[in-house]
Image (cartoon, rainbow, N blue to C red; front, side, top):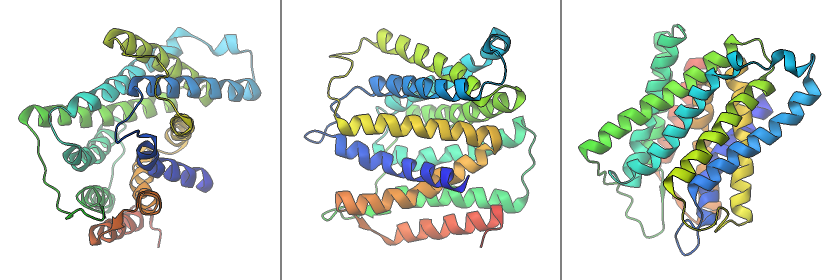
Length: 296
């Protein structure tokens, strides 16, 4: 279990540096829609062997639209958020998005507490607020380029704030709703994953056709892009295990701890420099883990 969580931390933390390595002349050469479709398709394909190996009864007895239908809403929420992230960039700069998107920690925790009726004591709420502080602190300037003065100026329009609120709400709702479905059904996780990823592939393919993708589906792909696709697919499978057998709160801690991996890889691969804000973020994460889990 610990190794699986550490692998997830490593994948989350390596995502941004890998995307940077994918750039050609400073620009992303591939379609983000194509990557999302391939990630969902890879998760679907990887789930099939687990289902076939672990099947204890005929699959036909377990496959029912009554079981599958709830995952359509979950896939729709995830697809909506993926598209919302793209459109939000029109109303705010990337730095602002990185800072303010940390608010999804609060929205996820609130919905987790309200919808799943899991009471979080004062110490645990303080721990989650420390995670929020760590994310905001790191986003505001935990890393700095050699010629970068290090100051972060935020720019966001009123429409951007509205979209950001919707993004944080959908992000928390999709995670909590998916956890509720996974735990409420007495089905193998691999089968539940197949339901979810089938709808994910279908909805994202429909979205790519609707948006009229320019160029070829795999245009601009490289070995680095394929590594991004595989790593994100693997992480999706790990997160399904976390939500089935643990909780979204554990997922939030994994995402926050990935800051450490992101920083170290950025220093090693991109020649960026750590700033005092990075170490403040590390302290906040350490205190949060101690308060929530009692780990010293």
